[in-house]
Amino acid sequence: MEPSLSDRRPRPRIETLADLIFGLSLSIGAIGLIADAPVSSGEINSHILAFGFTFLVLITAWIIYTTYMSVLPAETKSVMFLNVALLLLVALVPYLLNSVELVNPALSPAESSALRNYSSTLFTVDLAGIMVILAAFAHVISLEEKKLVARDLAELFRNGRNRLVVLAVLVAVSIAPQFWEWTLLGVPTRLYVWYVPLVSYWVGRVLRPASRTYRRS
Image (cartoon, rainbow, N blue to C red):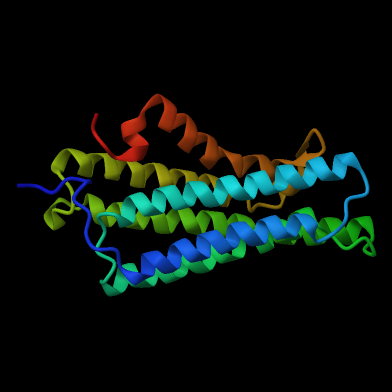
């Protein structure tokens, strides 16, 4: 009998640590809101939007991660290494995003722009890396010879792997300097590209739930 996604195994310690790191990253993002006292209502709105984005990135990654880890054997060396790498990237998310949002007022506009450009480039690498690692998890699960999930579910995981790889490449392309120089409504286009994976996941979850939850109705 082939295993289903509901056949959960005992929870390894790495998953408990992962929940802690995801939670701490969210907390650090919230603390970043009170790092500097706002001087205008526009600044308050800007900080809330920035935290909302941080929250969406982390919670989306956590949902995908926990779905994969519910069936993935975490005790193998390769999976353990990928887990450690993923958690490092997750821990960096709030710092890098705060570096994009908050700048030292003592810097000149040119210096601030250069610093934000550098921070946004690092976050783009970070985000692409998270998706590549999640794609690697999906790939391992999709291998039919491992029999981690039923054959029809393996196809869903292969589709998920392919989707994550395409999104990671799309995000990585925005590292190009032009994506910081080109702006839309005063916002660098690189920042808009960051939303593409989030829109893809949540719209897909609404329109085709099985493709994101990996459960057949």
